[in-house]
Image 1 (cartoon, rainbow, N blue to C red):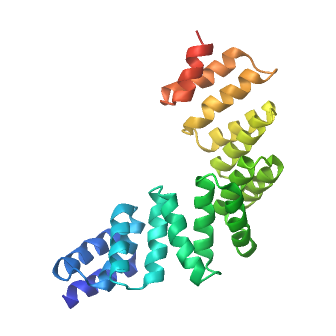
Image 2 (cartoon, rainbow, N blue to C red; image 1 turned 90 degrees about the horizontal axis):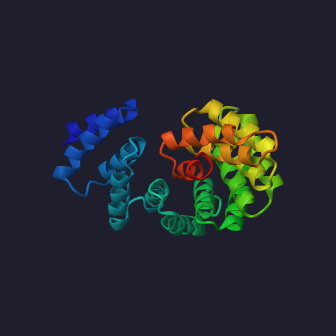
Length: 250
């Protein structure tokens, strides 16, 4: 058993997470409550984006009361990836009640609040996080989305621009900027930013329909130009693009 555990640990250190998870499987099959193997297998499965499996291991660790704070934080990370945002808030509330300065928990909870539509709670958490980690583009984009949903387009644009200054190759930041401009009927700026989102990621399905919507409303573009975008989105199975194509592109 010791040899298998050592093999698993070596795979983990080398970054071979698939081999590590397989080796920890062998350890846990013989010792189902081996806490160290469960914890490391959870970490390996997170790296492999096997979030269901990692979530289950973190649950087991919490039942065994092993490394509870790290296991709770791990479960929160998995919950976020599994789109269980209420679960994220539940777990991060626990962590932050014990460690108010835990930045990872603060960021996770803020991003979960944004996903749940609790914009001001998200802005508050992400603001505290960004005071310490101002270059986190993911947090900037999330807070920008929260500002947009809260009706403050100028603050949203500022956050998206900050993210793009750090990393100019972020299609989602251009897409989100475009969405703000579209909402405020600044169609030409919206089109320019959808152009950039598509340039960075030609497979950005949602961008085509929304660029078409902006073109349809803009005085500088005609229906034919908008329809070209709707047809492109329709070919990529975007239901919104299909609906617009059916209505405007006879």
